[in-house]
Length: 181
Image (cartoon, rainbow, N blue to C red; front, side):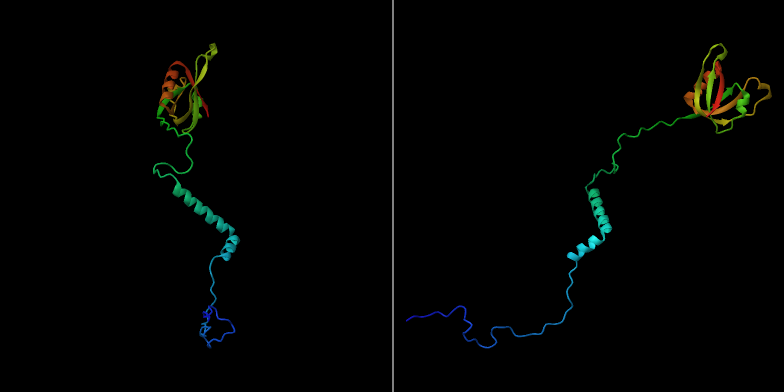
């Protein structure tokens, strides 16, 4: 006597009750096809618009650099300055009246002209000539007096304070001349 266990998988030849092997039929509703954005189409679009992709990449890189940059508020952004800029003292200009030996030369000058003032000491006996003031600006050319025709003519120059002192000293010991710059 052998008892046999029912088979786990019924054979295809074994009879089955009707309609137990498949689900009940139902109707599938109609729907539009699903389009997934991105994927391979996005890559193709990116290749077609290379300039835009490059611009986006540069913008993202710049934003990352700014975010990772220094946080000091008083430090300047960009390239560091190799040599700090030296602050020059403002040159204080003064008005210096100067008597020029040749009055005819002074009549050629106008306010705003730039001149070099030269001091000449007895050049007939071998003295020397030196430049006392470089690029002095003529501020005023007063009218010459008839009585002072032999003593030269006066001109007012705008020069730094140190040059004004040199002009005063040279005017006391030498004859002064001007050359236009």
